[in-house]
Amino acid sequence: MHHPLPLPDAVTALDRTLVMGVVNVTPDSFSDGGEWFTPDAALRHGLALLAEGADLVDVGGESTRPGAERVPEDEELRRVIPVIREFASRGVPVSVDTTRAAVAEAAIASGAVIVNDVSGGLAEPEIHQVVARTGAVYVAMHWRGHADVMDELAVYDDVVTDVRTELGRRVAELRAAGVADRQIVLDPGLGFAKPGSANWPLLSRLDELLSDGFPVLVGASRKRFLGHLLARDDGRPVSPLERDHATAAISALAAAAGAWCVRVHEARGTADAVRVAAAWNGARNVGEDAR
Image (cartoon, rainbow, N blue to C red):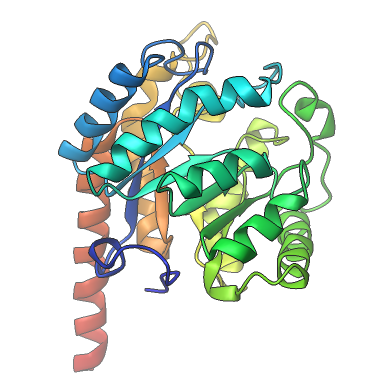
């Protein structure tokens, strides 16, 4: 499996898809807003995710749910830096979920090893220089606009082709900024400027995105398109907390397809799922070698 190099050995040595546990230090995230808003609560939640099988944690201080308003930079820093510092001091591999260069830089200085940028650098291109200078792993997600406008931008010809093309532009910008290929991870951006039906081709054709040669992170956890898939007889989508089994199913399928990492709010189901996928693929490979 293709792992970026700057991650801790304990993570890169795993011969399976990684599990990234979400730690939202926000009052308004769509799935668990406010539940882990204090640093102590965020730390407890992250440690619980790790105990359930997560390999690393993704700490974010700004909600990216559809319609969410921006958080001031100083407030984002106030939310995430103490939490990142505490995880890092315990030897936990930490990702910072941010679109801001200053937050990325402060997070890396506090011990974060991954910058998970939902904008892929479109929000603040200077973030690419931070990544180049520090050597951090960088997740470039497919994105077309901030949460308050992204639903207006969900128009595609072929969604998989369009996403690959636009992510290719992000890769070119990263390379131009001096970021090494081994630092780059791609994310198709499920649910971001994507109508519900557009998310399924991105998952079922994950091999096309993987064919571009970069590790891929899949973030389907609890998203709206799962709520609609599992809708009640009256058409009402199920709540975010009722989407975890479907999330684990996607984790298994994404892992079997070769995803580098899956980002989830509930870790135990996905931790089991990625191990099933690894055993499944391992048995298939043994069978092919024997033929």
